[in-house]
Length: 367
Picture 1 (tube, rainbow, N blue to C red):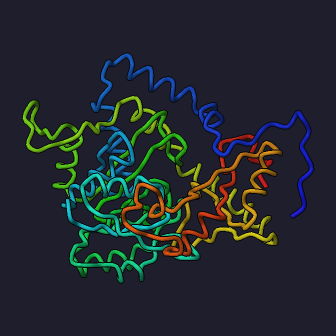
Picture 2: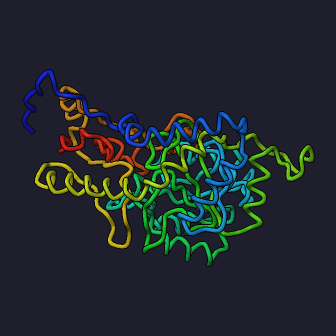
Picture 3: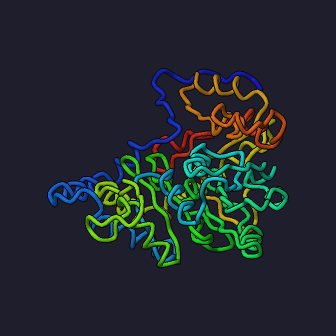
């Protein structure tokens, strides 16, 4: 590739994620709802959290949504409710953010990693089947970058072997699998509302969704110190409660989510058309899925050089993720060696996340 010409000094930088531009467009609504929470004095759980939970459950077409303080906590609680504990194994993907594995480890279980599909970059179902053992207690499917995993064969496998399939939908707000919302298909769906997500809070927040009323009730208890009655703690729980300020912001943003996903899909289409003839691998949307394009990730062998060139043009990029989870120092004790997950390792070496901010006036300069 030839080195790009520098932009004029007056050119504005293109951020990887343009949160200020998003808030500039809906800022009046956000400020109004935040001030209403401040005036109410109800900051933890309460009516604002309950309202968002109902709205998000309705959006996904599920029976119940339980708001928590992060996507990591959402995964932890879902696995706890699935009965995962010390000595158990949970199968998940090698290419994900590390919190997918943390939630398994928090419970004393062992994450069993499998490689990803070379086309969709989501969990390889055939490898899942091969890694199931008598100690397997659950499967965590990750909808990586906003593309849903192949849920139908995973759910069939789960039904056949009586294994809960939990969706890590932290990057898939607004994505579809066979016409159904990502996160609504599995035993539980887990979401992060980290500020940079398609649906992002103004701080940390997360949620677990389910169609099982008993699971929902236990999730609500566990997130609130294990209590269903005030000062009566039925089991060891956690302080994983969602705060009302985040819920209020999320309910405002939820009204715009489908529009934002539509714009992301349009930007991703422009990228794919304009990059098609370059020596890099562009992401592919599977025919039975609607990608939400939380991230637009290309693969190229000269990744670091290209990243420096783009930075010189004030175009900011990201790496998601440069080290596969099983090769992280924290999981060295599992004994995985380089080469064990060839597809995930190639993605880690060559991945480059390009800016994709549908709310930014700078989006016309993208591509």
